[in-house]
Length: 174
Image 1: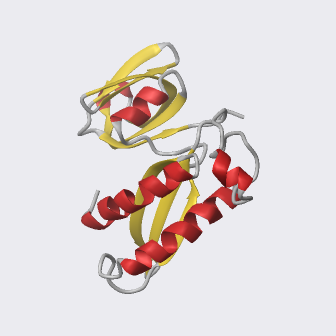
Image 2 (image 1 turned 90 degrees about the vertical axis):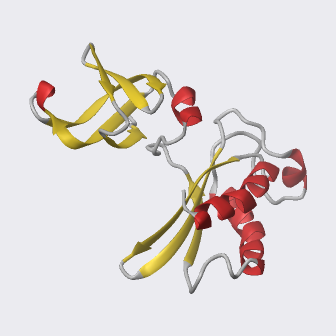
């Protein structure tokens, strides 16, 4: 992470926790000439919402998942704090808070540990010659070891070293 995303993460994490969820990641990117600061939050499906927030009417419902109301509550609390730290982010940007999503990226060792056994997509920087030039693999996440991703695809286990992997994300089967 960059200095900006690290510092925003430090500010956002306690706010997310206060609202009964966790900070998944922070992204600061330029798209079509506009800077975006995105804070992604998550909560397990069976997690209990912060009882104080429900009592205050700030967050609707008492079971997991991320709602628009929850994103709004985190955004409303974090936005003025970011304004207080105006020197953190130079210039203007668009601020967004959203769910990490069903097909979220896996980045940290804890992300991989949480989703062992789930359907996962691995994209490589360069096609692998030993698999007929494939760059994309979809299968069951078997493990994560020192940056290497282990995936079972059609009954065959593959190990992708950290230097090969461009992106790893969950996949949803419909």
